[in-house]
Length: 197
Length: 319
Image (cartoon, rainbow over all chains, first blue to last red):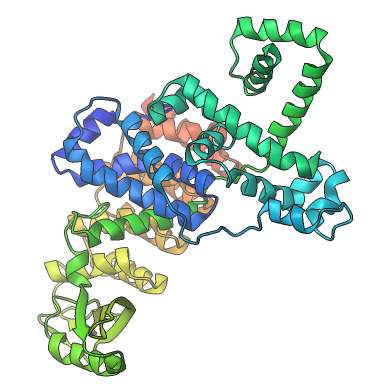
């Protein structure tokens, strides 16, 4: 989405793939699949889930490509599929790998708690992050977001996309993206504030 | 109310998403408002904290596994192969669905599956070295792989199993025989054992001659691009190098040069491209550009030196 790679254009590759040229489809996959997998990893936070998303995306692309009529750029169309797959994706293992932050806090209301994250409240953020505890708490907080809030949050904070790019991917206005971002940030901050501030 | 707007602008400002005019307005406000200055600092800490938790991008191995799974999924759905050429996956390892009566009959089911379906297989890949001669024949009992319970009917207690059935076989034919090439190509692309993939590539390299045929070439290119084992990728690259350079092989070499995380492979790729260009087997500005990119950005000193030498030699030849 950010750059058009060198070599044959997307349009040319799509046309060739639509005529049944497998190498053209392969080249389209190789052209974009790192980015797709990266988004999936950021969103799912688990390589196995990310691989599922990756596979679902490209299977859908493969199925739908014959009907693609260049109503948009191929990359825009592809990323919209990525967004849809992410938004509809259900994790393999329900519940996630981490203990809920709320549960931790409820179980350990005092600062003298044995929980290492709470013990380290006075440590610097870098130190906490190194320990991996804050990362888990951030993931836990992100896990409480709605799918769209989570998607916007991860695309912005972990993947570094501009808001207008996210809007194009999600097929909505930049204002809508901002709304999701503000809500998501407020929620995550509220969760994390109880730990690191 | 207005402070809520400034709070949003503070976030956008830290994320470099605020317009110039709004930024100036915000800066003026921050100069006067201690509450918003505190909010600015807190938001900045938050963004830094979250940024520090960003997961590292997917590893090359994860990417290869994802590509491999995709290829298998496309094959399983009956689609034409991604990264290969023919509809072979389903034919070679057909997932066979068989219903057997009763949970207690699992063992009998295996036997029945063998007796009933054993002769229905279209083809198998032998884990043994392939003999090159004239005919093919089956060897030994079949092996069952990936047995999984697909379904249970609670009313009848019938279960449905899904599994891959593999029977060792021996194939004797010339290296230019389509079946031999297909078996080797399948082994390169699909065998789980890297040793088997390597042996298949070595067989191609030793006995293959040239031309190898499109299926073999596609299998080798796929191995170069997606095999999780660096030794297999490297051997596939060497065998490809001995084949007549076409655009696909050139792109595979460029892909290795640009993307492979293994430094030895990038060095091999640059050396092959250099020799092929100097021998006149290969040309193209994209090669010079790709090597130029390595010269600028590769983290390996030796690769940068090789890149510089390559460009000097190519430019020297051009003059």
